[in-house]
Length: 278
Image (cartoon, rainbow, N blue to C red; front, side, top):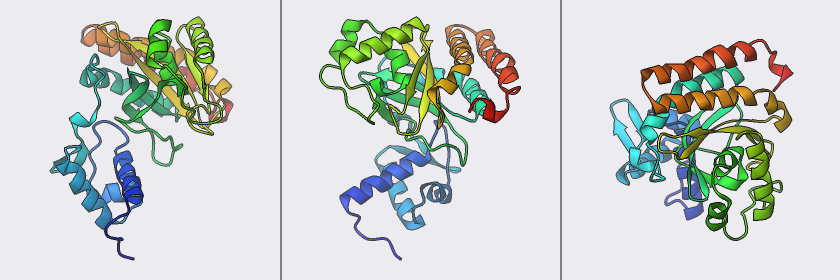
């Protein structure tokens, strides 16, 4: 059946979201047929929307295909996204390879998490996030790991008013959020969420300290109970610390970040049967 023309506004927004979500990590370069396959949309619709997004400056077009435009990545004003992604990329890849979970790298932008990078596999757990996308910081382990580094008065000012609930399990008020952030600090920055951002999904996250003293975060997400993720939390923390070291100095620091993941996380996780912890 030919595409309806013109698209109804709601339908068009949904189609644009499917197209943008096809670029599920920074630096992904996709041909139009690959975008159509990932999004499930007809090729004619895919071509039309790709052209519109390119004209709007949200996508770049090159000989190999389309990619997210650098300007599509919101800036928090304090994070060098290119440097952060460059140092963290091998760590994210290794974490995904060893756990099979979806790996996120994010920064804070006001009351939101902005996803700087994401690593997921074909046919893996569907997680409703995308590179350059935003979600409420109070609703995820990734956001809570970063919020826990903020003074209480800053949190009150930034998150004034009722907190939006993404699911029935999302924290909905500031007093409860402050109690949760106190628990995160007591765990030295490790944060969890169980179905708080999306039903059926849980996450564990750890903070990354940036050279200017600001904070980013690293998380693992999957369709597993949060308590199962406790087993990988120490290794996630080591990986986050490795990225911090890599950002802080030289090529030696970058290699150290990779070594932490390869030598610690990989060796331990590979000794566990997949059904022993996931």
